[in-house]
Length: 578
Image (cartoon, rainbow, N blue to C red):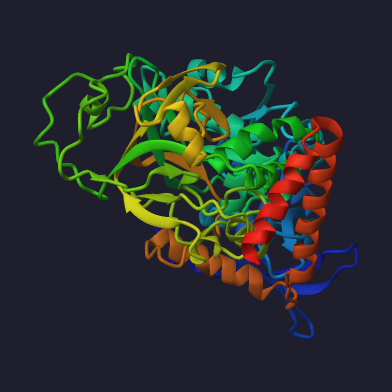
């Protein structure tokens, strides 16, 4: 029977949100997405289903599960009280200022309690019983993961009815090993309490398994405890209370995955980004400022804007949804992990001198200062890159530039880092593509930055000096991890994994049923939330960036003896403006 066809009922109860009971009528199911409480004055209080993370009755064992619902009913009617635990939003922003709340229902008749519980089960009001592995990275970001787990996640899980296992990562890439060896029959979801890096490890561990086609269907989620937190920010779960609620409720969405292949190397998968140039250098070099938290990215980015590097190379792009393989000879997969999800154009890697088919287009730039492939709208917790991105539309969106003027690079990141308009100031060119082949002018391995090979013979020391081209390999950045700088093929695996999202997650361009239902839930929460707008103070944002610039220059002058060169770079940029 569908939810819409179920008939709602009314039962007498006292509603006690603050230990001050008053007579009320409970209308369960009158609204498909919420409960409505009406008092004697006909004023109402509504609790959206999607904000409920648990409930309890006087009996210690009384939790809603599929197995013990009859026992729950027998024990609940003895006390006549049900406590609802839910998340309450205090501002009209579903990612900010939520707080834990309770509603105490004191029923007048035991039969009403039984009817209430049966009805709630039919409507799937409470979280479904599931088995979840929470993977905690105690060293992620600024080391707050354990505190977040103990003070936020565990208290919310107490009355959720979930079967929870907690495990801590103990060494680098431990999450890869855990995901690779995980018994898929033991858990229904895997949730990371960390940042984007551990999520990257989880995806690569799951997709490197022999049974990857089954493993990719395991829902994965993240509760932000890292430095960047780009994925959580994009999904609307940057706040840890909201993320924990999403993990408990268990709503999922499909997500695209980037597949990155290099000859004779294991394939790497990305759920967030691939970058080369300024963003890659800033991201990977920011590790020295990890103790600063999210601020480390802004400091490293400013340093790299001043001392910009230019990377030579050829980039070929395939138009989206174009699978032209007519000019490619049939060849086996190019990488040793042949059991992994396949790639369509593996032969492009086998011969470094091979030109791609005519359907692939060469980007006509002499070098690159900015090269970013992004799968989510947010680049970091504080940088909302663009609202053009959909993480499950099967299309890759690439932005690139060879701009070197300091102020043209700086201004978008100062003025537009949080409004989604970074791509609208002409700094970079954006295109849609279904495949990317990168042939860098200088190759190297990030594990040994002193060794590199010149691929493009025009990039000699003398020629590079005249063009100010960087003759060392630099970095390929995949979700915050360094990747060897060599011939690389990037393709997309559409809607390939399941990601946990809030039940009210939706996108304006998504007309699917889940999005429509999510919008209805979001509208309901906003309706019952205080009507108060939160505006960003642009003056404070500019002031913050100026403060970061001063601190960065001072730090480099003191600790790295590069103050003179940095101030000289600023002076040259100012002279260009004048």
